[in-house]
Length: 334
Image (cartoon, rainbow, N blue to C red; front, side):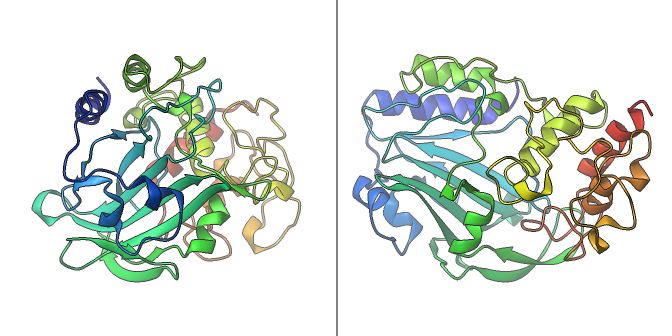
């Protein structure tokens, strides 16, 4: 079972919610719907924030292919107000009711050495989604609102020392924006396990099983799995929130969404809209059979500002992602 620990915890949380269990960390719906609460704990999303134990009505989830952020561990949760449910919309984003929340905590280290760095919230209010970053304190007892973002030095799982950036409120919009509106980018039905979706539907928290659910591959197979679906999933999750119509980089002409089947839109034999040092002297975004002269891989394989892609959310190179995309391009017929 993929993500077995998450799914077991999710089921327990859902059953507790249905049974009407109310622990000490009951969610404050008024805080979700208005204002900017200073402390993360004041929302009541967690029964134990330091251990990331969700409160009543809060369910953990995991993604088949997760977005990469310098190797950070990510703990993901959704909150739905009592009496509401998610609405399926094909294999795309689940539709969340007003008053719901998407919660993502970033941590580095393992076991007793794990440190929580930040928790990002997406709160669905009557006038749309609001993105708020919270920074965990040194004692790991709570996180406080960090509208201006922040930086801290830390060691990645790969042993690289980085200056980790907590995005400010406006930077959150850079990725979470389409056609000028803030939107979620993670919980798409295609990137969620059928088991989790089935549990949500059985619990009455999802209106129906979505068409095309659970179609993105499990990233844990990246070393041995088929390169094409893994690479396409990676680009969909890590790049397509900007590189799609209405996204922040739509003017590039690239559309890296999973559902895109036009080779030119995917960058194959496509010349860049604007040449510059970001192109590395190469002519095509993707040159079949030639990963080392493909702009897409050149930018993925860099951590240098002005060249590196994605522009935000990473300070180092994702070696696993680069290896998969390299295999995909190398296997293309010339």
